[in-house]
Image 1 (cartoon, one colour):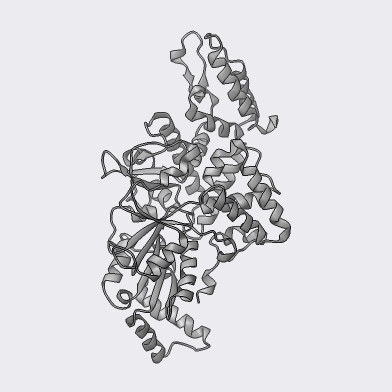
Image 2: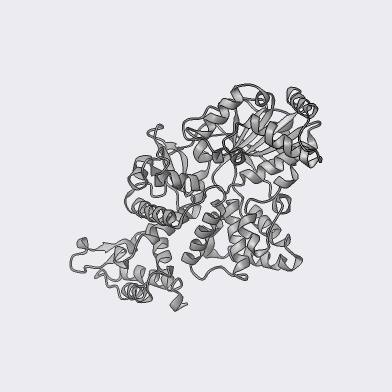
Length: 488
């Protein structure tokens, strides 16, 4: 029964091109950190190091993959539950499901007499977990053994395995549980605490960071471990090689060329972006579809990433075109104003987010949608006020992309009033806007004549200050030309 749960969660996205993988074909071992408490955020980060927003600030211990398997799962060395209750948490695409798949296989092979049961919690629908195990999972096992249904003897033997402490429940995606009212963590916690079979089992579950850190969490007996990102270049390049090597020997060189492309000096943002396993998979897929080249513009690359991300989430949380349009618009306004007005441009106070997306407790709000999809994630609490959550985009690069989408007129960046500069707008000289400007210039929805007007205004800019600002403007124009297809 475990075998069918060894497929990559991105297979539905790549299947149309005939690309599917089993986990072991591309798996690169992920490390884990044991957290002391939620991170308290005070500083901002630069987009080139945007993944640091998701780093833990107070760590008890860091584990290599094999060390975790042996020390925590086999030897039961965990402070709260002695290896009986384990939660793997992380942001979207951080490799939680893939890690659970590897853990399940390792447990079944390395821990004697273990009975490993995989449950995708989205499959429960309105059932409780124990009912699902007895009425759905066990019946499926019986049919696999060519029995019409599980006999009383089979059911008794099944319960006996729980009572002997041999059963491991591997529960994937607490955040995907369907609950009629309330919090999935509360629901699963109540079911475990009620006793019965669940109380006897050892449990390893995965959960999105947004839900786990939401403030209402009854799984206090669980030891929780956060997934680490890939290291660059070692693990990123290892994954790329495996992704292409597993297709055919002819694709080996294709993967190597992507590794070379990532090493180029101007690719700092992309190198940081793809430390997340999902985003790295999307990059590999785009490189494959683009016949060994990325889209010509940054806007084109991030637009494709956003489209692929929505497709990837479609199975768990389908959205309509209108919902995506409304959400993208609101995210753009939030992203733009945070860069423009906030002290910490890439980390937001919850009250600031409310102004644009509504309340997260309202299931129909854009905030709730953004959290479920993973465009916004909770990254800790405010250092000055631990009761107030801190949020960030999936990666700051996506914030810059959404901000660029919200700007229709290049005068937002530059409105030159030579005789009275205080009445003008000069965002072109503020470093935080450079990437947004480059993405804006690459947008296909902006007419070429407006892009050319902007480029010409940058080239012809006269500052009346011995050319100090004119030089900056000229260099920005030079960088921007590379993002305008009509100039490429």
